[in-house]
Image 1 (cartoon, helix red, strand yellow):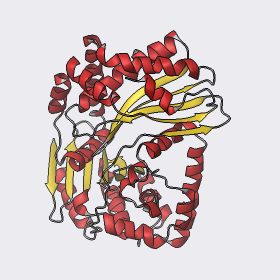
Image 2 (cartoon, rainbow, N blue to C red; image 1 turned 90 degrees about the vertical axis):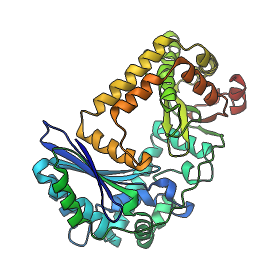
Image 3 (cartoon, one colour; image 1 turned 45 degrees about the horizontal axis):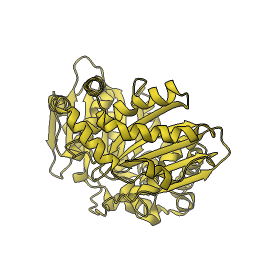
Amino acid sequence: MLKITELENGLRVVTQNMPGLETVSMGIWNAIGGRDEIEQNNGVAHLLEHMAFKGTKTKNALQIAETIEDVGGYINAYTSKETTAYYVRLLADDIHYGVDILTDILQNSVFAEDELNRERGVIIQEIGMYLDSPDSMIFDYWEEKAFPNQPMGRSILGKTDIIKNISRDQVKSFMMNHYNPKKMVISAAGKINHDKFIEMIKKSCINLPNGNINNREKAVYSAGEYREEKKLEQIHLAIGFEGIDFHHDDYFSLDIYASLLGGGMSSRLFQEIREKRGLVYGIQSFSSSYSDTGIFAIYCGTGESQIKELIPVLCNELNKSPSSISEKEINRGKKSLKTSLMMSREGSNSRCRSAANQLLNYNRIIDPSETLSKIDAVSKESVERIAKEIMKGKITISSIGPIKNLEKLEQIQSRLN
């Protein structure tokens, strides 16, 4: 059973009791992320997430970890473009430990200088790890060119020279100026009693940050190209278009198009480019949505000589796909989305996260039956329509590796309808 309570300070608390479970997942989701930074403090949202576990007025970093792990629990956090989340998973009887730790780090973090200096080094190592992983960095470079000179196009990790110089005051100020109960959702799923949980939250959340800065820039897609000649065995390639936001009427139609185009072993790109021609080991297409824009992209890794054949074949598949979609492909895509939705509802982690994100993004919880109805409403015509609309846009390309045989952006664009 799903229940929602809004507290006097605007903080929303949602719980989902899942009979048969003995554990509970809970977390605090904040509608603040990399898009809320300015260029001078790029990476501060992610650094703040790291620093939240490095000590409060009552606990040091080890005590925070031990409080959860001594009872067999799990604690973690993540930062995305639009969200920062802190979450735990515990036995239901130990939920008070989770509430204590997560509310403590949001209200009483001290951001000690020695911890900050160490964590700078950790994040710089993380940046180095990503720089050594072209299959990870390829998408950061793609976004940088697709959304240039704006927060949407900047890396969540930030740049090394900025991370080295972000001060304690900047980290603390970012939290105090941006975090606000009205931008937060506390979500719990599993073996949970709503009323008892609400009482715990009320007693614990007495001094949450009350910032109100909202400087999120509207994303403006521009298109562009990133090319990096590098001695690698493969060319890592991402080709994409501006997608759609998660409020768009054709949200599920585009998901189904991405699935039939490059969403699995039976997809068009996998069959044509991997199975028939052997040009790649794997190839995939995907759609990602944000509050005011989105991404539709194809990623693959291929050889230095194979790239010559791959580009024309890929472009040909993109050109012909919107007008040759079959009902069989549509139905397979619908089944895939439905299965994914229903499987995700079997886990407390995904139920907890989904409810929080829905409240932040849509200001309501969407019943699964409504989602299933929208998936059922997807038609051959709606998929063709959104596919053609997406393909009209300008492409953005990022590539890393032995790319001397890769055509220029203008040549590839000219191959597309």
